[in-house]
Image 1 (cartoon, chains in turn orange, green):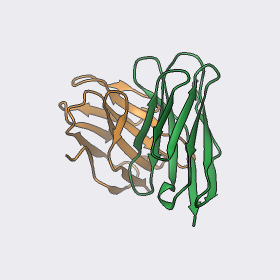
Image 2 (tube, one colour; image 1 turned 180 degrees about the vertical axis):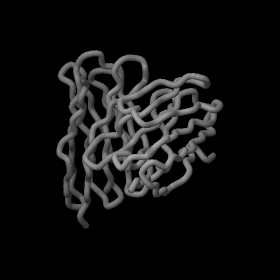
Image 3 (cartoon, each protein chain N blue to C red; image 1 turned 30 degrees about the horizontal axis):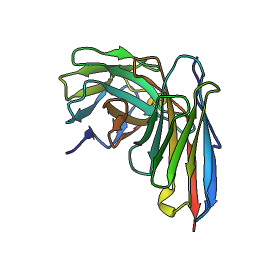
Image 4 (cartoon, rainbow over the protein chains, first blue to last red; image 1 turned 90 degrees about the vertical axis):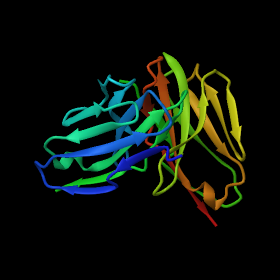
Length: 110
Length: 112
C-alpha cells in the first residue's frame, strides 16, 4: 500500500519556468489537498479538491493551478515560477477526518 | 482570520522527563482539532483527531486533552525517548468543510 506518492522529490527552476507536481493516492479518498510549508509557518493550503471533478482555492492560490485528473491523481502546476514559490510542497488526501501526506517536493526557484 | 498558535516554538527535554505543549485555537465554530507528528525527512502523520469538549486521547506514552470552550489543547509525552524527537503540529477544523488551519508546530528535541 503506497499511500500518497509525489513526484519529483526535488526540483530547481529558473524564474519564469513552468512545471507540474504530480500526486497520487491509492486509498480511494475523495478529498485531496496541496499545501506549501515555509520555515516558521504552518502548512498553508494552496488548493483542494473535495471530489473528482471539483477544485477550490485555498489560502494561497495565486501563481498556481490544479487539475483533479481522476479520483487518484491531483496535480499542481506553476505556470511561471517566481522565487517566492521556493518552498516544500505537500500533497495530502483525507480519510474520515485525518489527512495522509505524501513525502513532499522541495522546490527552489532561482 | 482564523489563527492557530502553538507554544513553545521549540523545546529541549532530557530523556526520561515528561513534557507538554499547547495548541490555542478559536473557540467559535469548532468542528475538530488534529495533532500530527512530523519527523525530520518524513511526512506528517496523524496522532489524534479530537471532536468533543473534554476529549482525552492516548497512544502509548502520548496523550492529548481538549477544551473547546476556552480554545486550547495540550499534548503530553510521558517519559520522553529519543524517538519522540519531532515537530508536533496541531490543526483546527472550523465547520464541516474539513479544511484545516495549521499551527507552526512545536519542535521537540530529546537530549540523551
